[in-house]
Image (tube, rainbow, N blue to C red; front, side, top):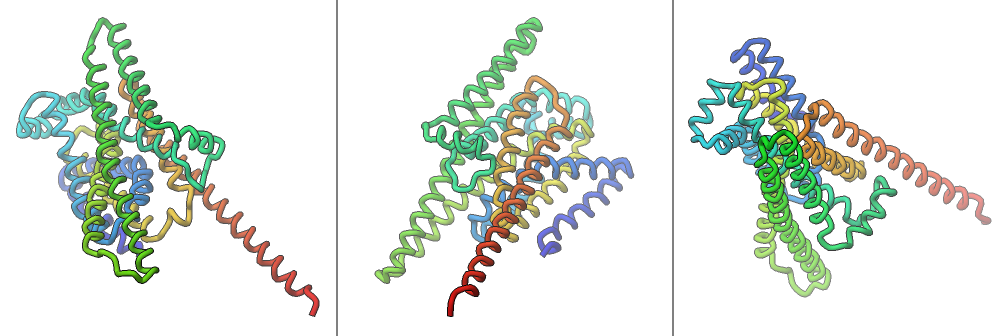
Length: 382
């Protein structure tokens, strides 16, 4: 099972490391290995959240996620995306941007770094909306009840997550504007860029997330209706329209997953420049990491890990919230990538051990209940 799920990741790792060694020797080999570990540590929470969505999709769309989705994640976000950012920010053609990335790496890094405020605002707002919508949702299983119970009641207020996100965005853009004013007005347009990019991230979440949620609800209603009809033996239902509806739902879920993955990859792409500005090594290292995130997602789905360890999804969403805040803070201040990675790992590890403790408590309670039942049966009069 493990080899079947991670086989492609192992193969890509071997090919990537060999390619790095041929490209730049043992130094390049080490850089690619470090980048792969960085990507995995930064994106582990991504895998957990992805698994929660992917388990709702059928085998066909899971396969699409592992094939086309990998191409988008590895080549689109880790290789093409930084070049596109440079082309847009520097007002140059894609060919010029590629030439710059290969032949003038320092200038390329500078342009990508200059684009960081817009990238961080977009990704930060998208991830913040995911976290807030999760936090304000009422659910049967709660991890940190002292936080989640009162916030679930607050979640009954319409559009609360949108209002909070916009307030956070205004604070971020105002902070940037104030800092620019204090330094003689340098980069005063940076605040406007942050505001526009943040609103774009918010709109993207509402459109893609809204459509996927709409079709998912429609699919669940259709399946429930068909189940009731089968039980009543009135008729067999409408399998053709249900398949079409499932396709629409799965497509928008897939689209939502790709946008989610893109938002998670922003910090990895930007953080990679702290290690190297070589676009080839960056693509190899981050690509290997992205493959493991994909394989880990499928592994969690097939093993039913989220059902066995019920707090994992909570921990991943708290990690998303932390990452969203970190991205927004990095618009103005620099934060070490190690801190970003450790925050996510600590939160998920905490939620995992909380799940283990919960499972043990439930098992012990069940054993006591079974033991009491057996004892009562033995002591009953004949």
